[in-house]
Length: 334
Image (tube, rainbow, N blue to C red; front, top):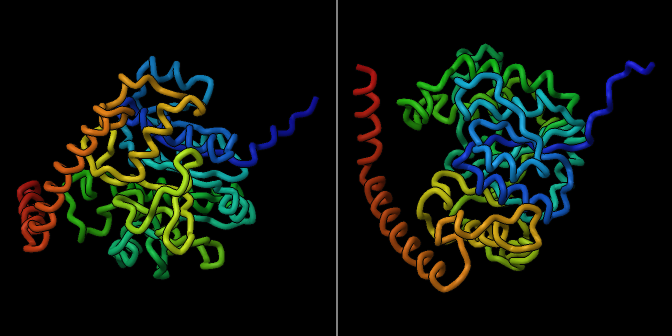
Protein backbone atom coordinates (compact mmCIF):
# COMPACT_ATOMS: atom_id res chain seq x y z
CA UNK A 1 0.00 0.00 0.00
CA UNK A 2 1.39 3.38 -1.04
CA UNK A 3 1.03 5.92 1.79
CA UNK A 4 2.83 8.73 -0.02
CA UNK A 5 0.79 11.95 -0.32
CA UNK A 6 -1.02 12.61 -3.56
CA UNK A 7 0.82 14.99 -5.89
CA UNK A 8 -0.34 18.59 -5.79
CA UNK A 9 -2.03 20.22 -8.79
CA UNK A 10 0.44 22.20 -10.85
CA UNK A 11 -1.46 25.51 -10.67
CA UNK A 12 -4.67 26.50 -8.91
CA UNK A 13 -6.57 29.77 -8.61
CA UNK A 14 -8.16 30.93 -5.36
CA UNK A 15 -10.75 33.58 -4.58
CA UNK A 16 -13.39 34.56 -2.01
CA UNK A 17 -17.05 35.28 -2.78
CA UNK A 18 -20.49 35.67 -1.28
CA UNK A 19 -23.95 36.06 -2.79
CA UNK A 20 -23.37 39.70 -3.76
CA UNK A 21 -20.10 38.92 -5.54
CA UNK A 22 -21.50 36.04 -7.60
CA UNK A 23 -21.57 37.97 -10.92
CA UNK A 24 -17.95 39.03 -10.43
CA UNK A 25 -16.96 35.47 -9.57
CA UNK A 26 -18.61 34.11 -12.73
CA UNK A 27 -16.94 36.79 -14.86
CA UNK A 28 -13.58 35.79 -13.33
CA UNK A 29 -14.25 32.09 -13.96
CA UNK A 30 -15.30 32.65 -17.56
CA UNK A 31 -12.34 34.94 -18.27
CA UNK A 32 -9.93 32.30 -16.98
CA UNK A 33 -11.47 29.66 -19.20
CA UNK A 34 -11.56 31.89 -22.30
CA UNK A 35 -7.87 32.76 -21.88
CA UNK A 36 -6.97 29.08 -21.80
CA UNK A 37 -6.75 28.40 -18.07
CA UNK A 38 -8.30 25.04 -17.24
CA UNK A 39 -6.72 24.83 -13.78
CA UNK A 40 -8.94 24.48 -10.68
CA UNK A 41 -10.66 27.54 -9.25
CA UNK A 42 -11.13 27.21 -5.48
CA UNK A 43 -13.64 29.57 -3.85
CA UNK A 44 -13.88 30.34 -0.15
CA UNK A 45 -17.66 30.44 0.17
CA UNK A 46 -18.71 33.15 2.63
CA UNK A 47 -22.40 33.22 1.79
CA UNK A 48 -23.27 32.12 -1.73
CA UNK A 49 -26.93 31.20 -2.15
CA UNK A 50 -28.00 27.56 -2.70
CA UNK A 51 -28.92 28.37 -6.29
CA UNK A 52 -25.55 29.96 -6.93
CA UNK A 53 -23.75 26.95 -5.46
CA UNK A 54 -25.74 24.68 -7.76
CA UNK A 55 -24.75 26.72 -10.82
CA UNK A 56 -21.09 26.65 -9.77
CA UNK A 57 -21.00 22.95 -8.86
CA UNK A 58 -19.42 21.74 -12.11
CA UNK A 59 -17.01 24.65 -12.40
CA UNK A 60 -15.33 25.42 -9.06
CA UNK A 61 -14.41 23.85 -5.75
CA UNK A 62 -16.13 25.47 -2.78
CA UNK A 63 -14.48 25.49 0.64
CA UNK A 64 -15.73 26.86 3.93
CA UNK A 65 -13.99 29.68 5.81
CA UNK A 66 -12.15 28.74 9.02
CA UNK A 67 -14.62 30.80 11.05
CA UNK A 68 -17.95 32.41 10.14
CA UNK A 69 -16.90 35.49 12.10
CA UNK A 70 -13.63 36.12 10.27
CA UNK A 71 -13.68 39.31 8.15
CA UNK A 72 -13.88 38.51 4.45
CA UNK A 73 -10.88 40.71 3.71
CA UNK A 74 -8.67 38.32 5.73
CA UNK A 75 -9.73 35.11 3.97
CA UNK A 76 -7.56 35.12 0.84
CA UNK A 77 -4.85 32.83 2.34
CA UNK A 78 -7.29 30.12 3.42
CA UNK A 79 -8.10 28.62 0.02
CA UNK A 80 -4.52 27.47 -0.64
CA UNK A 81 -4.16 26.28 2.94
CA UNK A 82 -7.09 23.89 2.44
CA UNK A 83 -6.41 22.93 -1.20
CA UNK A 84 -2.71 23.51 -1.91
CA UNK A 85 -1.07 23.53 -5.34
CA UNK A 86 2.49 23.74 -6.62
CA UNK A 87 1.68 27.30 -7.69
CA UNK A 88 -1.11 29.19 -5.93
CA UNK A 89 -2.69 32.22 -7.59
CA UNK A 90 -4.79 34.35 -5.25
CA UNK A 91 -7.11 36.48 -7.36
CA UNK A 92 -9.96 38.79 -6.34
CA UNK A 93 -13.48 38.22 -7.63
CA UNK A 94 -13.55 41.72 -9.14
CA UNK A 95 -10.86 40.82 -11.69
CA UNK A 96 -11.23 39.89 -15.36
CA UNK A 97 -8.27 38.08 -16.92
CA UNK A 98 -7.59 39.41 -20.41
CA UNK A 99 -4.66 37.28 -21.56
CA UNK A 100 -2.96 34.07 -20.41
CA UNK A 101 -1.13 34.27 -17.09
CA UNK A 102 1.33 31.53 -18.01
CA UNK A 103 4.33 33.87 -17.91
CA UNK A 104 3.49 34.71 -14.31
CA UNK A 105 2.69 31.19 -13.14
CA UNK A 106 5.93 29.92 -14.66
CA UNK A 107 7.90 32.56 -12.76
CA UNK A 108 6.12 31.50 -9.56
CA UNK A 109 6.94 27.89 -10.34
CA UNK A 110 10.60 28.89 -10.44
CA UNK A 111 10.45 30.18 -6.87
CA UNK A 112 9.25 33.79 -7.10
CA UNK A 113 6.29 35.65 -5.62
CA UNK A 114 4.52 37.68 -8.31
CA UNK A 115 2.23 40.67 -7.81
CA UNK A 116 1.38 43.99 -9.42
CA UNK A 117 2.35 47.44 -8.14
CA UNK A 118 -0.63 49.31 -6.71
CA UNK A 119 -1.94 52.51 -8.28
CA UNK A 120 -0.53 55.95 -7.54
CA UNK A 121 -0.07 57.35 -4.94
CA UNK A 122 -0.28 54.02 -3.08
CA UNK A 123 2.64 52.60 -5.07
CA UNK A 124 4.97 54.49 -2.71
CA UNK A 125 3.17 53.54 0.50
CA UNK A 126 5.40 52.53 3.42
CA UNK A 127 5.02 52.71 7.22
CA UNK A 128 7.87 52.03 9.67
CA UNK A 129 5.18 51.08 12.21
CA UNK A 130 4.67 47.81 10.33
CA UNK A 131 7.92 46.52 11.81
CA UNK A 132 7.11 47.11 15.48
CA UNK A 133 3.40 46.28 15.35
CA UNK A 134 3.89 42.98 13.52
CA UNK A 135 7.27 42.04 15.00
CA UNK A 136 8.70 41.17 11.61
CA UNK A 137 12.19 42.58 11.94
CA UNK A 138 13.85 45.16 9.67
CA UNK A 139 11.87 46.33 6.65
CA UNK A 140 13.33 47.00 3.22
CA UNK A 141 11.41 49.58 1.25
CA UNK A 142 10.10 48.36 -2.11
CA UNK A 143 7.21 49.24 -4.44
CA UNK A 144 3.87 48.77 -2.69
CA UNK A 145 1.95 45.84 -4.19
CA UNK A 146 -1.77 45.24 -4.65
CA UNK A 147 -3.03 42.13 -2.84
CA UNK A 148 -5.79 41.46 -5.38
CA UNK A 149 -3.46 39.21 -7.36
CA UNK A 150 -0.66 37.17 -5.83
CA UNK A 151 1.09 34.13 -7.31
CA UNK A 152 3.60 32.12 -5.30
CA UNK A 153 5.17 28.64 -5.20
CA UNK A 154 4.22 26.01 -2.65
CA UNK A 155 7.85 25.99 -1.48
CA UNK A 156 7.38 29.50 -0.02
CA UNK A 157 4.06 28.78 1.70
CA UNK A 158 5.50 28.44 5.21
CA UNK A 159 7.42 31.70 4.89
CA UNK A 160 4.49 33.64 3.46
CA UNK A 161 1.13 32.51 4.82
CA UNK A 162 1.77 32.16 8.59
CA UNK A 163 3.14 35.71 9.11
CA UNK A 164 0.46 37.09 6.80
CA UNK A 165 -2.44 35.46 8.64
CA UNK A 166 -0.90 36.13 12.07
CA UNK A 167 -0.39 39.76 11.14
CA UNK A 168 -4.02 40.06 10.11
CA UNK A 169 -5.09 38.71 13.48
CA UNK A 170 -2.77 41.19 15.20
CA UNK A 171 -4.18 44.29 13.54
CA UNK A 172 -7.85 43.28 13.44
CA UNK A 173 -10.37 45.23 11.41
CA UNK A 174 -11.14 48.29 13.57
CA UNK A 175 -8.04 50.27 12.60
CA UNK A 176 -8.39 49.68 8.85
CA UNK A 177 -10.51 51.18 6.08
CA UNK A 178 -13.26 48.78 7.18
CA UNK A 179 -13.30 50.40 10.62
CA UNK A 180 -12.49 53.96 11.67
CA UNK A 181 -9.05 54.41 10.06
CA UNK A 182 -7.95 57.10 7.63
CA UNK A 183 -5.46 56.73 4.80
CA UNK A 184 -2.64 57.95 7.05
CA UNK A 185 -3.05 54.97 9.39
CA UNK A 186 -0.39 52.24 8.88
CA UNK A 187 -2.96 49.46 8.42
CA UNK A 188 -5.64 51.35 6.52
CA UNK A 189 -5.47 48.74 3.74
CA UNK A 190 -5.69 45.86 6.24
CA UNK A 191 -4.54 42.59 4.64
CA UNK A 192 -2.71 44.43 1.87
CA UNK A 193 -0.59 46.43 4.32
CA UNK A 194 0.26 43.27 6.24
CA UNK A 195 1.22 41.48 3.02
CA UNK A 196 3.54 44.30 1.97
CA UNK A 197 5.11 44.35 5.42
CA UNK A 198 5.77 40.59 5.27
CA UNK A 199 7.27 40.83 1.79
CA UNK A 200 9.45 43.76 2.87
CA UNK A 201 10.79 41.96 5.93
CA UNK A 202 10.96 38.30 4.99
CA UNK A 203 11.84 38.11 1.29
CA UNK A 204 14.81 39.12 -0.82
CA UNK A 205 14.35 41.32 -3.87
CA UNK A 206 15.29 38.43 -6.16
CA UNK A 207 12.43 36.34 -4.76
CA UNK A 208 9.84 38.86 -5.98
CA UNK A 209 8.48 39.47 -9.47
CA UNK A 210 7.18 43.03 -9.28
CA UNK A 211 4.89 43.74 -12.23
CA UNK A 212 3.98 47.17 -13.55
CA UNK A 213 0.60 48.55 -12.48
CA UNK A 214 -0.45 49.17 -16.09
CA UNK A 215 -0.45 45.38 -16.59
CA UNK A 216 -3.30 45.12 -14.04
CA UNK A 217 -4.95 48.55 -14.20
CA UNK A 218 -7.81 49.96 -12.15
CA UNK A 219 -10.80 52.05 -13.31
CA UNK A 220 -11.07 54.11 -15.43
CA UNK A 221 -8.28 52.12 -17.18
CA UNK A 222 -6.58 55.19 -18.70
CA UNK A 223 -4.98 54.82 -22.11
CA UNK A 224 -6.42 51.35 -22.63
CA UNK A 225 -8.64 50.34 -25.55
CA UNK A 226 -10.58 47.19 -26.37
CA UNK A 227 -8.78 45.51 -29.27
CA UNK A 228 -10.88 42.33 -29.49
CA UNK A 229 -14.06 41.91 -27.44
CA UNK A 230 -14.41 38.24 -28.36
CA UNK A 231 -10.89 37.38 -27.16
CA UNK A 232 -10.97 39.91 -24.27
CA UNK A 233 -7.85 41.58 -25.68
CA UNK A 234 -7.09 45.07 -24.37
CA UNK A 235 -4.19 47.19 -25.59
CA UNK A 236 -2.34 50.42 -24.85
CA UNK A 237 -1.17 52.76 -27.59
CA UNK A 238 2.35 51.33 -27.44
CA UNK A 239 1.03 47.81 -28.05
CA UNK A 240 1.32 46.59 -24.44
CA UNK A 241 -1.47 44.23 -23.38
CA UNK A 242 -2.41 43.97 -19.69
CA UNK A 243 -2.89 40.61 -18.02
CA UNK A 244 -6.07 41.64 -16.25
CA UNK A 245 -8.51 44.42 -15.33
CA UNK A 246 -9.10 44.98 -11.62
CA UNK A 247 -12.32 46.83 -10.74
CA UNK A 248 -11.45 48.16 -7.29
CA UNK A 249 -13.94 50.19 -5.22
CA UNK A 250 -17.57 50.28 -6.48
CA UNK A 251 -18.58 47.16 -8.42
CA UNK A 252 -20.57 47.62 -11.64
CA UNK A 253 -22.97 44.79 -10.85
CA UNK A 254 -23.79 46.29 -7.42
CA UNK A 255 -24.21 49.96 -8.28
CA UNK A 256 -24.08 52.32 -11.22
CA UNK A 257 -20.47 53.04 -12.22
CA UNK A 258 -18.70 54.60 -15.17
CA UNK A 259 -19.03 52.63 -18.40
CA UNK A 260 -15.56 51.08 -18.73
CA UNK A 261 -13.73 48.26 -20.48
CA UNK A 262 -14.43 46.09 -17.44
CA UNK A 263 -18.21 46.54 -17.65
CA UNK A 264 -18.12 46.00 -21.43
CA UNK A 265 -16.23 42.74 -21.02
CA UNK A 266 -18.37 41.71 -18.07
CA UNK A 267 -21.47 41.74 -20.29
CA UNK A 268 -19.64 39.58 -22.82
CA UNK A 269 -18.39 37.20 -20.12
CA UNK A 270 -21.75 36.71 -18.44
CA UNK A 271 -24.08 36.47 -21.42
CA UNK A 272 -22.31 35.11 -24.51
CA UNK A 273 -23.03 31.43 -25.31
CA UNK A 274 -19.34 30.45 -25.62
CA UNK A 275 -18.51 31.01 -21.93
CA UNK A 276 -18.22 28.22 -19.37
CA UNK A 277 -21.11 29.47 -17.23
CA UNK A 278 -23.54 31.89 -18.94
CA UNK A 279 -26.09 33.66 -16.75
CA UNK A 280 -29.68 34.60 -17.51
CA UNK A 281 -29.99 38.28 -18.53
CA UNK A 282 -32.80 39.01 -16.02
CA UNK A 283 -30.42 38.11 -13.19
CA UNK A 284 -28.24 41.12 -14.07
CA UNK A 285 -28.85 44.88 -13.80
CA UNK A 286 -30.19 46.33 -17.04
CA UNK A 287 -26.95 48.28 -17.62
CA UNK A 288 -25.00 45.00 -17.87
CA UNK A 289 -27.30 43.39 -20.43
CA UNK A 290 -27.35 43.70 -24.21
CA UNK A 291 -29.72 45.68 -26.42
CA UNK A 292 -30.96 49.22 -26.88
CA UNK A 293 -32.52 49.64 -23.43
CA UNK A 294 -29.33 48.39 -21.78
CA UNK A 295 -27.22 50.84 -23.80
CA UNK A 296 -29.44 53.72 -22.73
CA UNK A 297 -29.19 52.66 -19.10
CA UNK A 298 -25.39 52.48 -19.37
CA UNK A 299 -25.26 56.03 -20.71
CA UNK A 300 -27.54 57.21 -17.91
CA UNK A 301 -25.43 55.48 -15.24
CA UNK A 302 -22.24 56.82 -16.80
CA UNK A 303 -23.53 60.40 -16.73
CA UNK A 304 -24.79 60.17 -13.14
CA UNK A 305 -21.54 58.64 -11.95
CA UNK A 306 -19.45 61.25 -13.77
CA UNK A 307 -21.27 64.06 -11.96
CA UNK A 308 -20.89 62.26 -8.62
CA UNK A 309 -17.17 61.60 -9.15
CA UNK A 310 -16.57 65.20 -10.21
CA UNK A 311 -18.19 66.40 -6.99
CA UNK A 312 -16.00 64.08 -4.92
CA UNK A 313 -12.88 65.37 -6.67
CA UNK A 314 -13.87 68.93 -5.84
CA UNK A 315 -14.33 67.99 -2.18
CA UNK A 316 -10.92 66.34 -2.19
CA UNK A 317 -9.36 69.37 -3.87
CA UNK A 318 -10.28 71.55 -0.91
CA UNK A 319 -9.43 68.92 1.69
CA UNK A 320 -13.03 68.56 2.82
CA UNK A 321 -13.13 64.76 2.59
CA UNK A 322 -9.93 64.45 4.61
CA UNK A 323 -11.26 66.72 7.34
CA UNK A 324 -14.55 64.82 7.41
CA UNK A 325 -12.73 61.48 7.72
CA UNK A 326 -10.63 62.77 10.60
CA UNK A 327 -13.70 64.18 12.34
CA UNK A 328 -15.50 60.82 12.01
CA UNK A 329 -12.43 59.05 13.36
CA UNK A 330 -12.37 61.31 16.43
CA UNK A 331 -16.10 60.80 16.97
CA UNK A 332 -15.72 57.02 16.76
CA UNK A 333 -12.89 57.08 19.31
CA UNK A 334 -15.02 58.84 21.93
